[in-house]
Amino acid sequence: MCLFGALPESGGVQFRTVASPSRELHVEILTGPAAGIYQLERSAGASLERFVEGARAGDTYSYLIDGMRRPDPASRFQPEGVHGPSEIVDPAAFRWRHDTWPFTPGNLVIYELHVGTFTERGTFAAARERLRDLRALGVTAIELMPVAAFAGRRNWGYDGVDLYAPSENYGHPDDLRELVDAAHGLGLGVILDVVYNHLGPEGAYVPQFLPDYITDRHATPWGGAVNLDGEGAWPVRSLVVDNAVHWIREYRLDGLRLDATHSLVDDSRAHIVAEIATSARAAAGRPIAIFAEDHRNLVSLVDARERGGWGVDGIWADDFHHVIRRRLAGDCDGYYQDYSGSSDELARTLTQGWLFTGQHSRYSGRQRGTDPSATPMNRFVICLQNHDQIGNRPTGDRLHHTIDAASWRAASALLLTAPMTPLLFMGQEWAASSPFQFFTDLEPGLGRQVTEGRRREFKNFPGFSDPAAQALVPDPQDPATFERSRLDWSERTGPAHQTCLSLYAELLRLRRTHGALAASPAPRGDAEVIGDDVILMRRGNGIERLLVVVRLAGGGPARIETDSAGRSASIVLTTEEPRFAVDPRPPEIRIDRKGIEILFHRPGAVILAT
Image 1 (cartoon, one colour):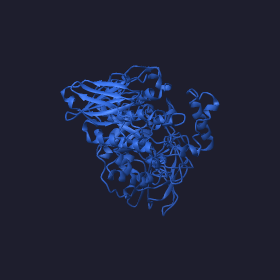
Image 2 (cartoon, helix red, strand yellow):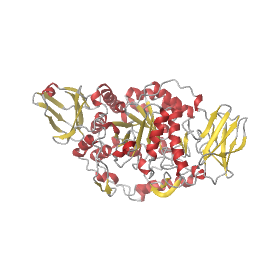
Image 3 (cartoon, one colour):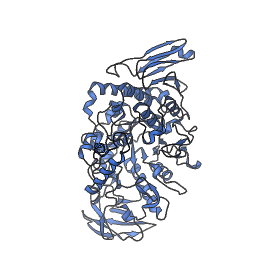
Image 4 (cartoon, one colour):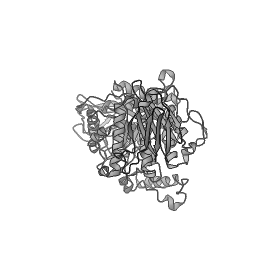
């Protein structure tokens, strides 16, 4: 059972919340037969509670804290927005039709999407209508960017302030349950991105209940840190862990992606992430996935708790993306200065899971990373695009907007045949024309600060050093910035988009039907540089063996020496087939007893079965 919120029971509703001992708290029920004001009574620790007979789902209420009307910190729904009253929701009233999704690390292909820009209507119901397209594509789980209620009509989701309440902009909580249930009916899992490292700048009333919620003992990019280990931390930790349990229990989610865990500063004996993982799994009573987004390359995150680790199932591993981006787009600013983009770097990343295993980082000025040599490769989540790596660019351009189509196809083949867990960002499967820009809808004063800060952020980027150029950075507050970021599903039928979509669908089909191409439980991959700038990956599982040969740029020959089995190799796929390219230039491939010779006329990838 969840600890906090307005919890319907037989005959009424149990209201339970957290507040510091100095706070006097009443619940004011605004609608329904139990309308009135009721004083809450203090129970254990910082909890206050009151059972109100006759209160029911659908009634709205607020808390009166020292006379001020505020939403419930554990509100399940904010029908009038983050400044308005909360609504009582009964999760037990929803009738689930489908069993939960069977998560296993080897079958995971993640599809990240933003509910507001994924479709024209931008709702949970509209996203549900596109699930069959994602199932046909071949992904196995969707990852929803944060849906917790935020101020205004549009936001990335990382400014959430009512952490239990799905945003009213996307629909009712039961609409989210419908989305999850429909996904399960199609064999898709649902992972939710959750943010516990900060609160949004508008409508964050939780610190009025818990003045110790934010501490200056630690610093984060958002200012003070969420208080997880200092005086007054117990109710904060309880609220965070309870929130994670709530998403798993009340929405039958199949996993959580914990945002920026490097900013969850916690010197407690049990780190908050380890506590979240343990509690969420216990609440689920079935296998679920807990992932950490963390740029530090720390193996301890996936180590079991008994070995001093956090016990998460996987880590968003950035090095693959950064090496590819440096190699193909030439980025060299910020954290890209740590990468050369060489084929050797790429081969090492594909072999180890990440590149930095303790080397000095010029960008951070200190050592980065630990040795992952005993870590299963399926614990590393890799991508060519995600919301951060697109949206945190000045104009929100995607990688395929910057590089040639042949290189994009080759990089896509590498992503979807690598031994790690792949993540796609919405629309990349058809090389979507829409950017993904940073957007907000904060009150005017805060909005101006966000716009000015966003443009200052890029003053050191090439081409954005002077104020006139900075003015070209899209205004996050402008509704047009949000509208530009919507996917245009109709463009998929255009030749260039359709061929790209065909490639992604076929690569995912191969990954599904060839066990050797699944995410690997082995602690190392097998990748090397052959010839002039060509990557060779060997994928095998004891039953079958495949070779993936990738040239990301230029043309030229590649030769692979093979054993006797290799002499009967067959071509499974090349990214330059007519079904995948509007202007195909297939490589020349010769297989004989001496080995395999491939002449690439331009960037491309070849998959061979031996």
